[in-house]
Image 1 (cartoon, rainbow, N blue to C red):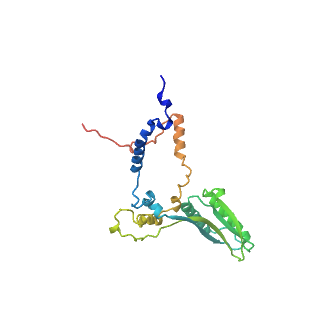
Image 2 (tube, rainbow, N blue to C red):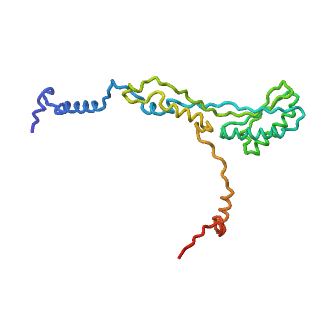
Image 3 (tube, helix red, strand yellow):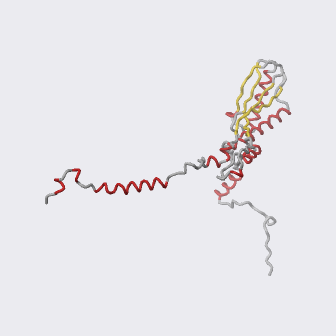
Length: 246
């Protein structure tokens, strides 16, 4: 059979694909219409406007905490009072810093008490080592002293939390029809958290883990290997007595 359409001019041949064009355009317009936003409505930044920690951040910084020890010339080390001060200062640094900063010992050089200061520095390092401070967390430096009784300085960087300033009441809540968050929203909670946190370093990240107590674990493990009872032994007086009345 001879195809009669083949003999016709190209512009006279009907195109069936063009019949679907109006339907496709209508579907596209309908899809775009469903995604249309109201351009007159205010655009809100979503979670950034809701999260108080983003609107009222707590600034955590490090500030030096320094202790000075007067070492007279001819001294052979620290006095009992100075040893107690070093112990207290080291405990305070461990509680506030959580092991994130070095303890820096600065010894005077060139003065009359240079030799006595070096004896004191060695004793300070011995005290810190006995308290469990690793050698890598202790740094010894020297500074030029122009005094006879120049002090030995022990310092570390202490974390400090700066609370946000509250009181921004620039928005009239009575006329706020969109029910959005006002500027002072969440500021009081952030302020109270900053002034009440025991260790501001906790706001930056978790603390480092300490060594586990293994005394009881070793005892239980030795009994387990020997096939013995691993629970704590109790006398008859410690156990609860139950009397059954007939």
